[in-house]
Image 1 (tube, rainbow, N blue to C red):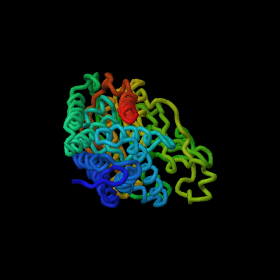
Image 2 (image 1 turned 45 degrees about the vertical axis):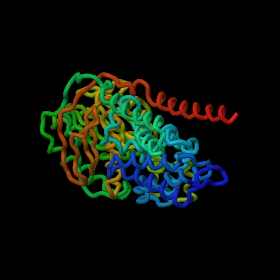
Image 3 (image 1 turned 45 degrees about the horizontal axis):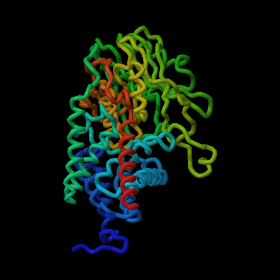
Image 4 (image 1 turned 30 degrees about the horizontal axis):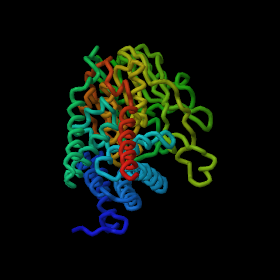
Length: 485
């Protein structure tokens, strides 16, 4: 027989329970890029659900905190390169969301609902949210990826947690609950595989993604911008015409005035004429002493500027500092001397090759940015980014995983370009077709498809999955109230 404590729960040493939940979080973290061992997320979430089973609130909170720290200390380890105190605060904040979500559940079959609601919250708040280190980013190599065209990254998370929670329920010999969860997971995978994926291609074009190469691990304020520009000018000579469009990375052109008033604009115009194709290049423009703009600017094949999109979703404490006056008294802000001016618009842009959707760098982590661009007619997704500041491959590989999710969610081919990598081509089903080598100067050149159809997720967004998760918890809560009355 198993002994029971005074509160009616099965006695279990709190330290052992916390360590097992910490292990569960670590398993989830190692399922993420750059490791990408996706089955470990199922194992980790199953272990979590098993340990949460039947716990009362206080031990459940301890278990949830341990799980969150296991996931996010590793998931946000890269942030310590820039600010160790800041990274610690982020780890605690993200753990808080998971803790609140798991505080709502007592049975393995409800872990998916609690995690989905926690993820939906941390994707949005505070300061616009921080979807990095989410479970779905580790599933791009697994069978649940296709479900993103039905319910986005939240559904991918939910199905992964259903698989883990189902296994935990079966271990507890809850055959009905376990069978239902496993059936939901398998059904979601099958439904995702056969769901509409953006429709047939309307047109095929050839795109060249340019990577200038160079050293990594340098902050923007310590980078010689003229060298970065020169490397990309040199790399573009490797483009093999004919091509329909050339994609340059984010922040390759750095000027103190509106770009159309600078010599750099003439350089890019001449280059576009030489290549015989439009060039979409990342431009950072100074705007007074305390502000700047981060834009993707399009030069036509005749050398004129014919399009522009300014980044809407800025990086907190990277591109702007909230409450700068207060924060400056507590921290050194020399690495972020000016604030980015937020742009407007959907990110859709007309080019001579077709209408494209643009998400600049950090925006690729936010499903609403790519979704807005496709809603506005984007037939192909572009991600000009800059991950040169990171010493390791953790963020660049995570960014490619996010790009794969956005491609599937919207049923669009996707092209990414970064100064030192990764440049990548992803098809509309999320398959990584080619990826550059970090630090090397190279050009990736491939045909891509322009598509006009819509996926289910592109039409509905996250609402249905969030509603289902909330409904599941509400129904369980109602049943508990009835049984206790």
